[in-house]
Figure 1 (cartoon, rainbow, N blue to C red):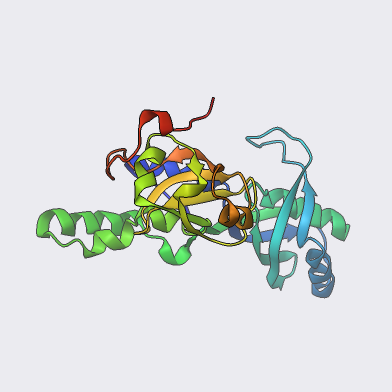
Figure 2: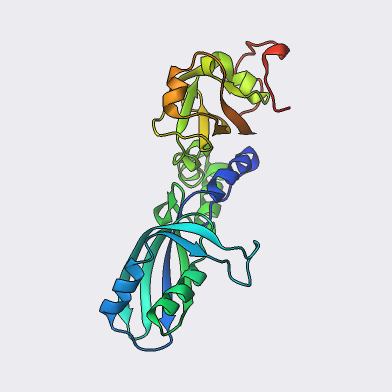
Length: 255
């Protein structure tokens, strides 16, 4: 499962990189272990775990904490264990297999891996290059857009896993020019937002305006009458899409 973004939608990939992932993997044990023992030990890895990235990794090999949301044994056949894992972004499944093998006392390594979910995308959303090529042919040669609309989704679909802040139409163009979101511009929002969370700023129509970092909680946002509530990280909507209703002095940007 690999999300691919086109044109300006590529700006939103930073959110997908930090989204939760789900994998189906095959782990090979280095000696025989009863299935009941395998399930017992693997259940202990659900929740926050310490993990040091493997030698061949794109990040520094520093000990860090990652969260395993679900870890389900699907099948055990001899020394092969088929399992599903839902985890925090940045979790190394091959290192997870090694750590499980160490906990079992027999050693283990990852034999196969398939990513089945990224953020709001699952394997049900996946299409082959052949399907994409066929959809483009139907659109260009016959003017049939149905297939293209099925395989190419709006950027809002890619970001549907993020909590949202809906803003007034009068605030949209200011955000498009890099302004930080102030309390008067907020109309409604998702509950459960905490300071530091990545959020999606949208219009009343549900159009993606920008990715932002919450500066205060949902509860505080609802109570505030002035002050900044979110810091703009990446603008997704083109300036001028909505009419300008601000002066240059009103745009608050990062110093």
